[in-house]
Image 1: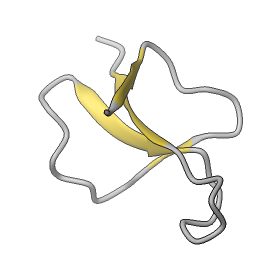
Image 2: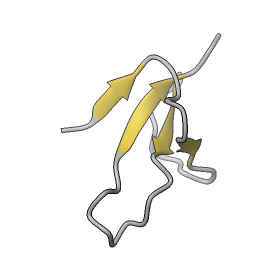
Image 3: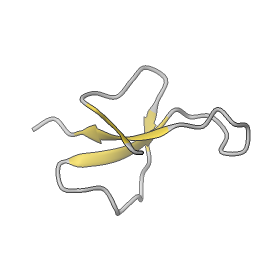
Image 4: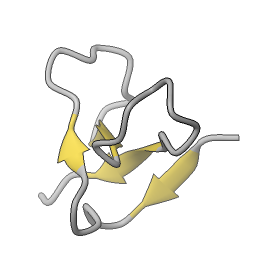
Length: 48
């Protein structure tokens, strides 16, 4: 299941170059390693 957030949580960053996000949203992650078991990602609603 994909999490959908209203704002970017502290410590998270946007994934530049990700092209699959629906219009009005951006992909973001928690800036952890994908291989460490702590990686999380979500769609974040853009401010408009």
